[in-house]
Length: 492
Ligand code: G6P
Image 1: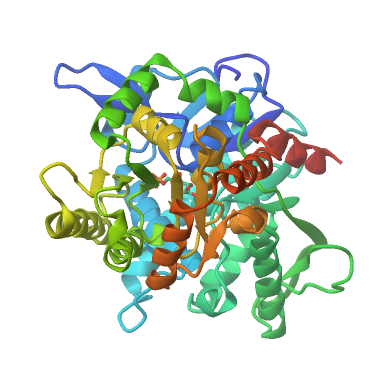
Image 2: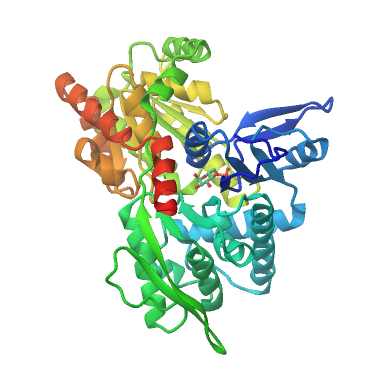
């Protein structure tokens, strides 16, 4: 990737809240860098390996990151924005993770939430300012006519803001989450929803992981049109996308434009992933895990401790498996990596605690002197996760709603003995993997327990065949091709 200091302005830029690395500040003042969690960073980092001139603009996420910016420490091809910490906190925790994430994943506890009051409006202003900081940095860095690929719900307003600053640029926006149904989007105050959708429609191309999320966006925009709130989308027969022109109190604003809305289902790079999973560091972790697990079967899951990942119902299903099928007691181990995420939010801290407690309950109920039924790891340990992938006999991926879920694609590629995939209908990956997965309703704990049993007893030849087809589907659109496909559509 290009150095931000390079004299040649970049032709390809990406903008994402999270950068490829974030920093930690040791007691002695030393900065150390580590890779961030989640699918966006792994997909985008892999994609940009093939784009040596690209510039990645991201936010400083912590005091350590801000210190790195001040000391001028950075990776080549990365520019970190030092945004006022209070504004950043409002935008990231207050709006992106507490409102937009909850809206797109349908996570509200509706009798109590959401509440759109004066405090919300104040945070929304911060969200707008934080988006503007990105739009301004992109406008400043981009070469004439450059392609800018803006990522995710944190930066939904950037396309509209950037178009006003630099109409010469080609702008794409990609959403890594689902797009909320109109029922949930409809909870947002009308003017806020209009700003959000209008911000996105500032792009020349909108991308989602699945057709379902793309259709959800387009039909939501149409529904708003019918209610006379936002952007008219007439006519509707020119391919997937939205025709629009903004209506303000004083009439129509700007030219009528068409924004195509397409699905680009991000996959994994099989060769890269297998190479990563066979580094000596991972071999060591694998040996340690093998010593703990013995010759028992393994059910593996790896997630951020994220409400939408449905970790609690996954544990309940495992408990029901051990109750309904006692023959598995002592013969299976559930390896659950649930590494910390968004711990500034109380609801996430409480959730993490509930995951720990439930795992302890299961261990207390069924464990014996020589068998611990659940091994929970709450550390962000990528090498251990890869070792668990290699050891997996069964992968449990049961989100209530998830943009894609790359873990569902990674495990079949890496597992050594072949692995049966228990996959919920809520994962974006369901669209591509359903034929060879054992699919479950994420709320149905009993059905999930039965699917785990079926997975554990799958005949070896069927397991091998299914794993092969899952791995082929998982690697159909690796990150570099995923990125290139969007660039081509943007340039085309
Ligand atoms: C999801 C989002 C990403 C985000 C990741 C990790 O995959 O789509 O944008 O980076 O979660 O979440 P965090 O809040 O730690 O960046």
